[in-house]
Amino acid sequence: MRWLGYAFGGALVALGFAGLLMDSDPPGWALWFGGVLIAHDAVLAPAVLLAGVLVARAGAALRAWLIVAGLVTLATLPTVLAVGRRADNPSILPYDYALNLLIVLAGTGLVAAVIRLAGRLACRRSPERSRERSR
Image 1 (cartoon, rainbow, N blue to C red):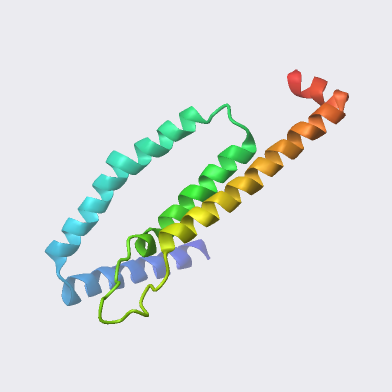
Image 2 (cartoon, rainbow, N blue to C red; image 1 turned 90 degrees about the vertical axis):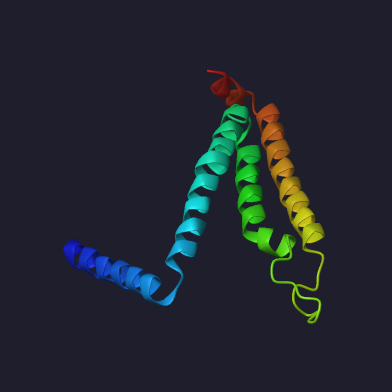
């Protein structure tokens, strides 16, 4: 079954490359793909590693919120930057997406803070758990 899946996936990849070469601008695509690889390797990966080092000792709630915040920001970046907005059609991207992103980040940050605070309060109420965590 595994080899059948490999064969099917390989055929789909070959079909995609054939379509790319026949129906698009291969030099433009290669330039875009190369730019994405460079941006990932030179900017995104080092930033994530640095953030990981900086928050390694932070609580799980903060680390989880940073992951959520990063993913939500990356997913909404095209709307925040108004990619595709046109003056002749005001119904395309009609809202203030930067403000909406800030509201979502603040809301998820508040949830993370409440979870962190609840965890600290639970540890203070249970001395046995405090001793177990200090070991």
